Image (cartoon, rainbow, N blue to C red; front, side):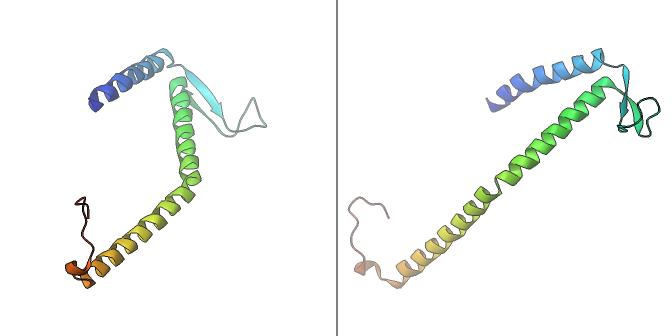
Length: 112
């Protein structure tokens, strides 16, 4: 079912990307020189669809990196909580193994 929904989303997106690429094959000049409009030092020719798709990809990467960096404090808290719970579990196991079963109170609901 998950694969069906993934295909339901990805197939139309791929179709739109292919149609956009076919419709926008014309070359455009990409200039990285803000001072000279007529004879730029840093410029290259590329198809319009490549420029647009590259800009989208760079935006997705920058957004993902920003999101990952913003969530760092939550990942750190989760690691700290995981280590603490493991320490408490091991301490509980050690204490349970040190005390004989006859000394523990009987559990009536069967959860232990």
